[in-house]
Length: 367
Image (cartoon, rainbow, N blue to C red):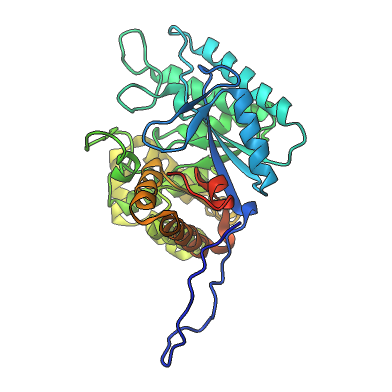
């Protein structure tokens, strides 16, 4: 691994106490994101729009990437399924293909010591960027969407997959995913995008601005983001994943709330939170439960871990920086982002998820 070395001047005056950063990037804390498409041939790969040098893979090619990442010391893989589960308006057929593809990957990697975190992003992604199962008329089907979330949890736990991502799109998604996991032995951990927001950063590679799904939290609404993080912890989150990774303030505020019972109680009973509860029945019901069982909530908060996720737009902007200023400049910026995230989350950090992990460990960057 080639870390970025910047020579230091010899100062006469200095506020520096520690001569080096207290945090180091370790492959053991990194998760390489790998996109898998059911629609590609087993050994095919296809360039991904907006991310130079990044590909989607058929399952056998994905296996090769997983094994290669592990040879570099990477212990976590974020396996992003980008193809739809809706096969001719038949979700069940798509889920069978999803599970078969997953089983092929798991069987092929065998005893390779990686923890797989499955991201079901593409399984119910609509053409306009929303998430959910649609009926024949293009309307969202709440029952089918809820069933899909539960079945995803069941399939992954049944196949002993380490983790599953919940996308921060539906109020009940963690609760429903956890329900499916519990039915299949309660093996899989939930990595939730609880504070997921309508960030423009994620979509800077698109041709026009203004991508707004209507499902995610609006920018700047930090209290709403904090609230959803706590709600998801109550309903079964094991790892709260902050995205974009540059949202260091969200890492800090969540740490404060999970570690400080008095602050958490004050926040949950604050006028702002009560106002949000009046606008959402699921939030209101969950808050009643959380306030009724504070010891159980404290126990869940004590067990929570955190992670960071680099959105595709950040990866794209780093590629632009690499072309404009050189790869070393881009790598230095990326490394600083990772180290800052490690510093803010500290011992709470489970891993950092990024498309650039393998490239970084090889001394390069996607560009």
